[in-house]
Image (cartoon, rainbow, N blue to C red):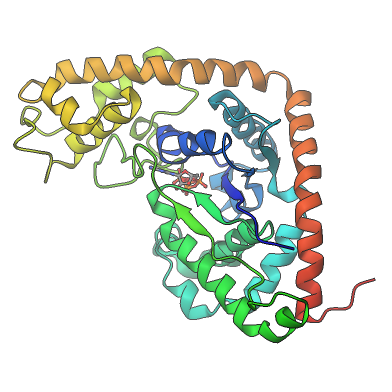
Length: 349
Ligand code: AQP
């Protein structure tokens, strides 16, 4: 069981995917499927960690799983090249997560900023699943012994925790790992984050200091991949800006979070550098820049939304893609989970 380069990543089916998911993660995923073995998951078990009001209940969850799968396909993931599936169909994720619940330390989870943000002030009322979310994420990655994880900047801390869990598992079970023939004593690789998309942290259109997020109550804060051309243009027109004109290349964007975000989005969508955007628009009013940004966003995102709507109309075909991907994912995860059970000392027949 040699460790070979393998990519794993996933997105949560809560609400609609947005421009941040697309620029921060998806563009990397598409590139990597040309060069690596890639496994892309719709992480439906993560979706239910928040309150049922947030994920919307059973019918909405089923719809969202199919919609996220449609987004994967519409953005350019190819089920012939990559394994595409939903997490709950591969029970090894949950099994390994339990082992990791017993490897990870409370102190490690207490430091997770995403839990603090999502639990808010009412921590006592947050689900145990939300607290243990990073352990399940570590299991998602390591049940395939994946080596590379393309994510946005916000997932960096969880990835570091996955590495700590892999390392502690290797340390705790070193003797059985060596006896099982892994001479260097390492069963799990330490997965590397790949945080190199064109915009690794896209911010809210209503507040340049907050991340663009599916669960933001204001729909004006994000561009959903399903938004039509008029909606995209309107959201960009309404995006928050400051009263100054766009800065020149020399002045730069420091201290101007909203301008920095919009220029970053334009640069990422147009495939340009930030300096080149400032050379073209610096010194001018936001109105002209927003019009150009609206056009480039409609050009890039509009066709994805149209294709998602077309694909989502054929639920049976989406379910077939997920069933096929789940079968291929289980073929990798099953033998790895069997080996984990042997290493821990469980008896299996
Ligand atoms: N604003 C963002 N900028 C760059 N990358 C982002 N990602 C998410 N938001 C941004 C990246 O998209 C991938 C999938 O994320 P997720 O759906 O699993 O959940 P998340 O990171 O918690 O994203 P959201 O939108 O904030 O969802 P909710 O509101 O449901 O929690 C990840 O690689 C993430 O880094």
